[in-house]
Structures are given as C-alpha cells and as structure tokens.
Image 1 (tube, helix red, strand yellow):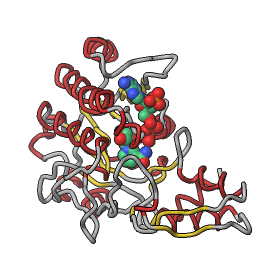
Image 2 (cartoon, helix red, strand yellow):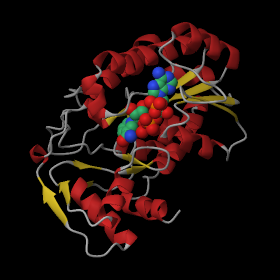
Image 3 (cartoon, protein in one colour):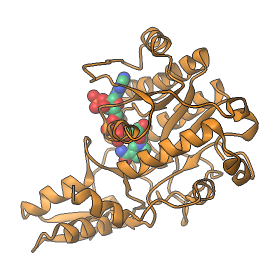
Length: 312
Ligand SMILES: NC(=O)c1ccc[n+]([C@@H]2O[C@H](COP(=O)([O-])OP(=O)(O)OC[C@H]3O[C@@H](n4cnc5c(N)ncnc54)[C@H](OP(=O)(O)O)[C@@H]3O)[C@@H](O)[C@H]2O)c1
C-alpha cells in the first residue's frame, strides 16, 4: 500500500478531526468538500480563488502560517496548474505551482505533523505500454504538466514519512473544465465532432474519486487491522479510477447516447491530427488492483458514473 505499515503505526487508533483541502474551488476540491459533509469532521477549504480562505500555495511563508494557524490532522492537496497545454507555455508558473507549491505544503505538513494526501496523475507515464500502468511502473512524463506533477510527488516522498500519493485520470464532474460538457455543447450545436480514438483511459467521476480518497485517508490514518492484512508490500503510490476503460471517441459516443442527442456528426480521428500544444500519453489506463485489494471493492464503471453525472 501507499503507506508503509511501519510508517503509519504511530497513528494507530487516532481519529481525523480536521481536514484541510487545497484547490477547494476546483473540480476535485469542491467534490471533496461535498463528500466530507457526510463525516463528523471539521473541514477547511482553501484555494487561490477562495473568498473565505484565500491562499497562494506558491508563497512559502503564507502556506506555513496558514497551516500552523489551521492545524489540520490531514491535508488533501489538489491545488495545481491543470491546463496541460497552458503548462507547456508557462513553464515557470507550472513548476512554481505544481512542484514548489507542493513542496511548501509538504514542508508545512512536516512542521505540524499533518498527514498529506497528494493527488497526482496518469500523465507521469509516457503511455508507451500496451496494458494498464501499475504503481511499480517507471514514471516517464512526456510533457511539462506530467514532469511538474512527478516532481511534486518527489517533494512529498523526500520530506515526509506519512503520506498517500493517489493518482487518477480523465476526471469529469462539476466546477471544472470538462470533456463531457464540451461534447454536449458541440453535439447540440450540430458541429462535426472529430474525437481522438487512439488514446485510452478510464474516465473518472470526481464524486466517486473524492469518496474513495476520503475513505482511504480515514483508513490509512488509523490503519485498521483489515488494511494491515491487505498490505503485502509497500507501494509508493496508489492508482484509483472508475472501472472499465475507453478511448475519447468511445467516451464521446456514450455521452451523446446517454444524453439522447440525435443526428450528431461524430468521427474518430488519430491523435496526431489534433494540434495540441502538449503531447498526451496514448495509454492512460491505471491498474486499480492494489486499491481493490485494500478497499475490498472497485469503483463503479465509468459508464455508471457518467449516467449519474448526466442525471444530476
Ligand atoms: N482533471 C483531471 O483530469 C485530472 C486527472 C488526474 C489528476 N488530476 C489532479 O487532480 C487535482 C485536481 O484537479 P482538478 O481537475 O480538480 O483541477 P482544477 O479544477 O484546475 O482545480 C485546481 C484548483 O487549484 C487552484 N490553484 C491553482 N494555482 C493555485 C495556487 N497557486 N494556490 C492555490 N490554489 C491554486 C485553481 O485555481 P485556478 O483555476 O484559478 O487556477 C483551482 O481552483 C490536481 O492536482 C490534478 O493534477 C486531475
């Protein structure tokens, strides 16, 4: 498992009373805040755009002061520069947020003893495999976003003993730039949709992922006997996505089918026909078997998750 058993035993039988979520105005951060309402836990959300608790994670003194003031038991760190093409154009800003910002958060965790959950990405892999990526596969990022997120992972590992690095892929949900909404808008406008059919991944609903992250954090924090039994070797990260996989084209077709949009012009294309600034991995499927072993269940399929998202 992510957390080596020996490293978390000091937390045995403790209870998480206060959680801080960074990136709380974003897609995942807002889903985490909603999901955390189910628990009897004090929750503080912070974001550069937050009116209540604004914090720029690139400012080390501000981060340190804020976290010392809040004193959370755990931090779920989602704040990041996530626009993959923009990252390619703004290297300094990207590394400042994704690497230095994460370093600032990890340092504050070290100073205060807070447990860190760092959210990472399938983009740390180059996508050259023909099967899914597991936690032991070598990260070889092919774009700036992936490199900066991997360097964020390295900061966490270097500074901390108690942490979870959780990687996911192809997130969709409310409060963010969203492939699902883009496809619906284009399909309804009658535009011809040309969608990439040679990149594979597992679309993942922010709500399902948020629930899984919180359950895992609460388990890792107290490291229940069940988890101890399920852990047969230490892992440095854990992969969690909705089940099943598809190409972007297959994802788009399913969005249109569930929404019932008629007479849509949609065609599969190869990725090198699209003029993206950043390279994208062809294989983004993350192997969830370690997570399934720990949690005792897989997340629902992406089709099930998509149906729930579209029926909100
Ligand atoms: N989206 C995906 O498909 C995907 C897949 C795998 C992993 N992830 C990871 O999951 C996490 C959450 O992704 P998401 O899609 O929810 O991202 P998101 O919607 O872009 O949310 C990130 C939030 O962080 C904020 N932020 C940016 N710079 C900041 C700074 N310097 N200080 C404080 N806050 C700052 C952003 O504000 P602005 O909007 O103003 O920049 C935004 O509100 C990220 O760590 C990402 O790398 C995402």
